[in-house]
Image (tube, rainbow over all chains, first blue to last red; front, side, top):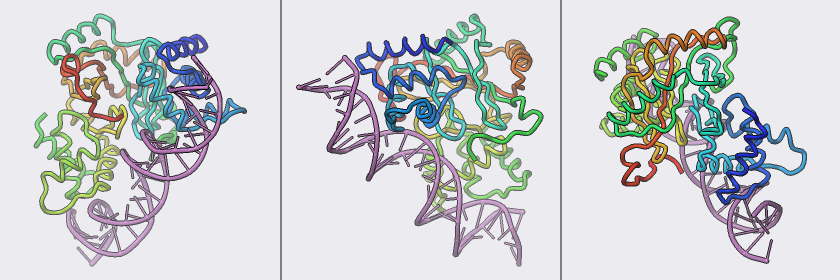
Length: 161
Length: 161
DNA sequence: TTCAATGCAAAAAATTTGCATCCCA
DNA sequence: TGGGATGCAAATTTTTTGCATTGAA
């Protein structure tokens, strides 16, 4: 959850893998852990621009950085439910969490922790490995429903269409 | 799971909502329930073409049909992990299932049933509703890991990059 | 017969890539 | 200093839309 620490650790990881720590990469690693929800590449780019005066960071570099981080297993793509793909810090650096997705307005929020208990998780893992010849490494739970604003109040859709 | 029945029921639903049952719509409702994994619009279009001699179904119509079915709650988008968006029959018509996603090759397979027990599900639902002012309607679980072919054998990535 | 729905082509949105230049290690 | 990384612009890929025509009710 601590943003500065996470950023530092990720930066170290990128360096250790033999990649250079450049301006665009530093900013992506700065912006991504700070958000409480998955971000699109355009979101990341916008946030970087708003906190920089000096040099210009191109959209292409954000794409390239996100793809690099995907390859390194630092970032993962979460479901794009219309609109552009969204990304978040994943794996050991992400902090285990899941998503609340409002079916009305498309808003995505993080839900810390995991409603799937450890025992259930292990049992399921074993069962799947046995019956499907598939080794489960990680899981990702989406809770679909209606957010507070949409339940009463009526709220405009923020994504797509 | 029964494909013909599902297709018929969905066709009826589309008609009842006041929409016309046309050639492109019939074919999308025919192809989608028959697949054991979510399909991209291009996938659907390709499968339609391969089973038709007579008239031509345009890609645009497949997009329009999928969007209609999304609005009707018949279809839902899942698991765009790079590459185009993928769709499947959802809600009461889909049959409750989740997905196995191979992190090596990108393959997506259906996993019938739900490893999250009913009791756990209800408890989680209550907890989320209380602590987050969010009403959970549905859930979607992705199991990420390594498929059989990738574990041993080494297999090329089928999606993206 | 009527107007929703289609096919086609063009437009828009999202993402990737070629290449000359720049700058981190 | 050398080669990986960048910015820019052009190219691809994915999705949407305008419009004349078609066809389901």
